[in-house]
Length: 177
Image 1 (cartoon, rainbow, N blue to C red):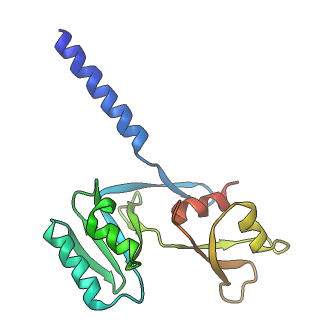
Image 2: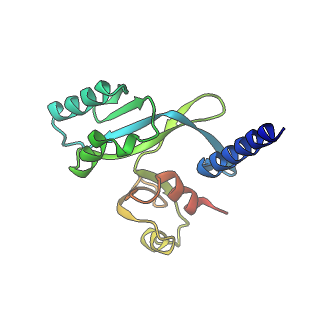
Image 3: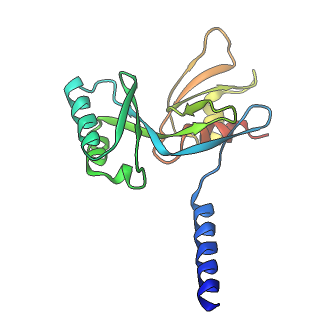
């Protein structure tokens, strides 16, 4: 009986720990739209200036340690496999350190099974009387650059420094009611 009770307590502790570790992903579009994290996959965003040989070398090294890489665009690849220590892997951490990999994002799934991932850019719309620079400063959003989107004086594409948070976190910060 004590053994069964111990196992149940251990399982409950494990589930509680996993629940605390898992992150809830959502974005605002008049309401919270929830997304599920795909646990065994990430998206690598290579530097646009990476040499093709360097990129192939990184992908081949990842394949050699049982990751599967698939090209989405010439500078964006999906990586799947056991992602527990992925960003600490020496291949990946070295590529980040030397600037060959700009950032890595989670793969997310919408309720209709659409696969999504974030980049380092968001599109935001501000009130006419507002100044985007001040809005970003007031919300402590780390901006690299921004530009007006088309002819609309209220809509901008904002490039972010996503070292500390994802673009979806910053977009949500701006969109909260």
